[in-house]
Length: 157
Image (tube, rainbow, N blue to C red; front, side, top):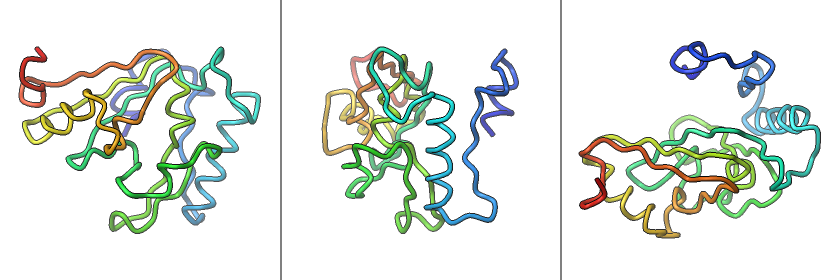
């Protein structure tokens, strides 16, 4: 979906696009394989602030304050070493998520939010409510919020 919607419209080298492998793997194997791919692309198993892993990271925010597949109350919220993790049991289908160390290793992080149902979560995340996973994203670069009028906190426009 990201390839069709975004990446096919910009000059991104194919070697810079890294889909999460899922065919014939458990979620844990998929997360480990994706982390290995990212480390190989990065050229190191340790990230540094001087050289972010990502130039741009696009994120959304759920009506419960989750982002990526970092949901309230999950162990992945405390992960400080792994770059990717399996998330099982939160939704009907297993998911793979980037962890905060990987998400935060970004020159720019942009949250996209639409609809009045997101207004409260956007306001709380933007104000720094650390009970929300989305509010804990702290990139080494810049953090941007893009909302439609309905999702914009009162007085934010």
